[in-house]
Amino acid sequence: MNHTFAQKILELNYHSIFGKSKSYQFFNNSNIDYKLIGDLFYKTHKLVNMNDSVLVFDNDSVVKISALKAIKIRGALISPFFFGSSFLFFLLDTGHNIAKGHATIVNEQTVVVCSALLLGGIIVRRIQDKHVYIRKNVTIRVLDTDYRNLTKSN
Image 1 (cartoon, one colour):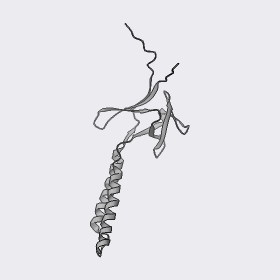
Image 2 (image 1 turned 30 degrees about the vertical axis):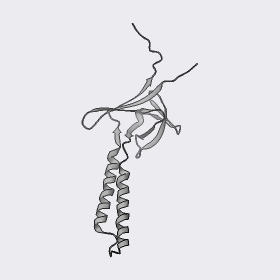
Image 3 (image 1 turned 135 degrees about the vertical axis):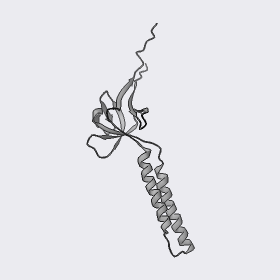
Image 4 (image 1 turned 180 degrees about the vertical axis):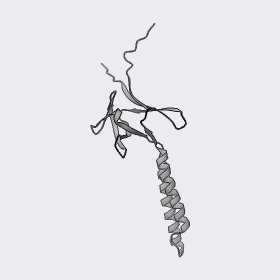
């Protein structure tokens, strides 16, 4: 006899800056970044189980949904390209100056370009992830998709 269990989904509904309604879903065994009320930093844990008002994580911690302050939705990892290009440009320019025997090893222009790339990487790192703060216009609910008891009605 085959037994199947319903998939539980943590659904996050929020409004974007431009007023568009958006929805994001977290499933079991997916990583979730969250901040509790009174916390300064985000915590990252794997979501193991959920109930109507409680989330259970892989480190056996139980968090009430009402205690959540913010949830971070990870975006594309673009910022490492800025940091890497800054480091690589600095290495290539100083290596070229050493190889050619120039009097100045580190140019002012190189420092300006590298610092601009580092600043761009810091800004992109902050922008690439969506930070959803739990307020009155944000709804979090647990959906239990159990379709076994559906019957065909005539």
